[in-house]
Image (cartoon, rainbow, N blue to C red; front, top):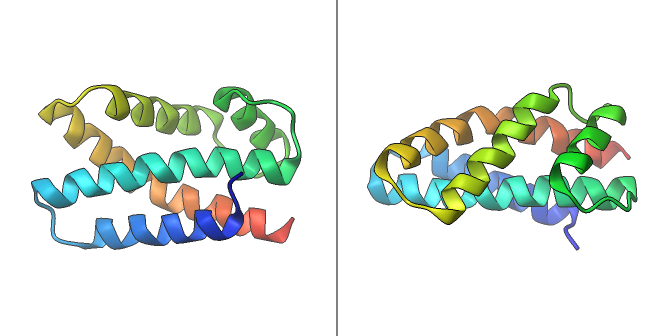
Length: 118
């Protein structure tokens, strides 16, 4: 099961990837790190909240009810971007997911900090 330390390490890796000069290779690495961070985020929250739910969108709703996140729809968009990037690869889609990864970083960090206090 996901742990806070794993999530923290994944978030740091995403931060490093987003801080590097953008090229095709770095973009692809960033997308992969984003996918991992999104998965670890909801799975770690699930573990910390001790919820029996295993569906990402349900866990995200639980996260909002526990005041771990503020914007459910934004987190749904992260799940959607993660899912799209995992099942198909197109250049325009890669660019969109890369942009979503940039948006995710502060929200992922905020979640991590709240999870540390529980």
